[in-house]
Length: 262
Image (cartoon, rainbow, N blue to C red; front, side):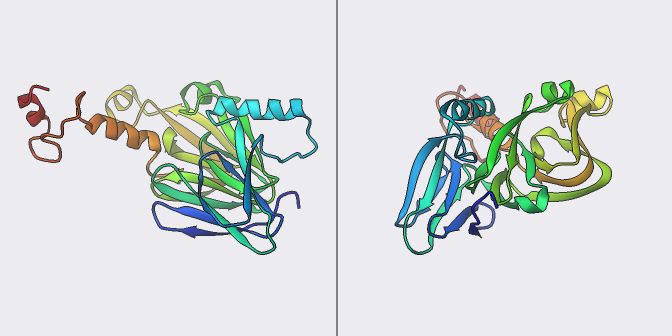
């Protein structure tokens, strides 16, 4: 076993947190700022990199951590270790409404590719790195740029998704998905981008210009409410500069704002 063997419990329904139980000496790594609470005798330390290779030199750690900058994540991860003599717990939560997906990496070929901000936490020994899309179409129009995130290991890892999570098992068929709704997929799945129908559908269909296509044999995780979609709706519904709430939530809506001079 390369990864620590941690137990866990998911708490909540739609705005979940994951409570990880650590035996003495066990460690879980997490994105900076993800911790919700922790019990006594759990120490935490911010380190460069994910700690999957303890014998790695400083330059190796610097290079590995530096690659995380391309994903928009912090160059550091936080390591939470149980220094006591009994079981202790530490909990983590996502920064937006949704669900947490627990992944026993050993059940999925020890490697999962996910969108760049999906990783939440994992047992020590899990390698968190980046993967550049080989296909130019995926890179230009995939919504995640040229970069996706890869998780490698044989222990527990946890990823976050917005809204409801849908798990699909592909047996050679093709699945077309809104690019923002893709959370992750296993080895054996080919990921590409295709045009969303004819020109009329692309311009007036409201589904965007391109769709992600997933084809092969493996598992795919989808989310019903990407954070970007929720943020766009909030921004579109927010009052214009000034922030007055006149007319908000009523049948007047925009008319109320026009009469108010905004």
